[in-house]
Length: 94
Image (cartoon, rainbow, N blue to C red; front, top):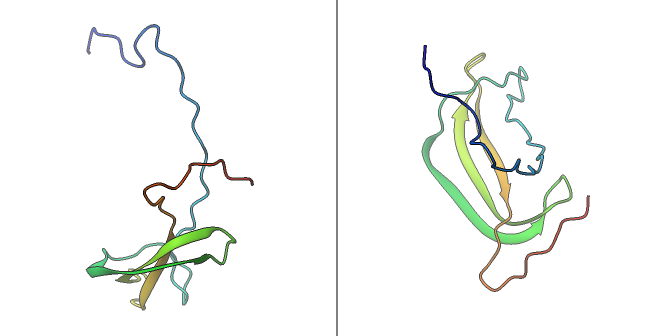
């Protein structure tokens, strides 16, 4: 066994972490979350809008995959919100 101490160094502060809800990709046929690796290059579509969850986005990312459980092919769509240079950073009200 190691004789050295593990963990946070003495005197360092605990960081506050923001908890983020993540929507899990799942098969529309069998509801499985087991998927193959993404194939091909992701397709990015730039454009501003509001996602179905009600959050703003600046781009949509489309990635091809298939279900490992039933073999159903699908395209996973992700909404991305990136700050553009010069945009002020402001807190999000939830």
